[in-house]
Amino acid sequence: MQVPSRSAGLIPLRRNDCGELQIFIAHMGGPFWARKDARAWTIIKGEFDPGEDEDDAQAVARREFAEEVGVEAPPAPWVDLGVVRQKSGKIVHAFAVRAPDVEFVGSNEVVLEWPRGSGRLIRFPEVDRAEWMPLLAARDRLVAGQVPLLDRLLTVDLD
Image (cartoon, rainbow, N blue to C red):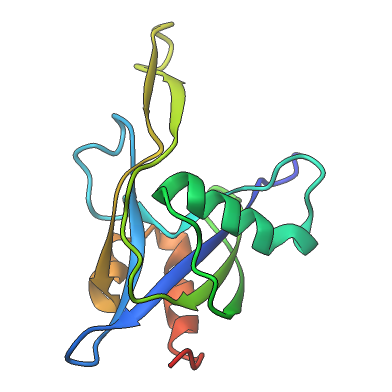
């Protein structure tokens, strides 16, 4: 039995001038996601390295945020949102943080064979953009397995 991959991530949030809750999420990079919007967005997250375990989840989320957004993760107190299991089986441990000033700078790059089976390797950003969006809009764009995290956001007090 194959052990599911594990990731940890961070959801920055803020309220706009009208008091509406917004979250900062990322659009996945690469040719497969290039023309997709619905279910092509993700919380900013990444996989645990070998030897890291659940005790390292905040450190993993902090590292991956810096790699995928290009700035350090917000230092404000983080709220643990727990874990979700995506359709692929991947387990995602998420945290939320109030961070009104976060902006996307740039992402690390990855190498992938594209098209699959072609032998051609291409380099592309892991995340091609990240944006603030209202919770309702994010619900339709976020990978389906991460949507329960939005419901959990409504139960925590970060104001």
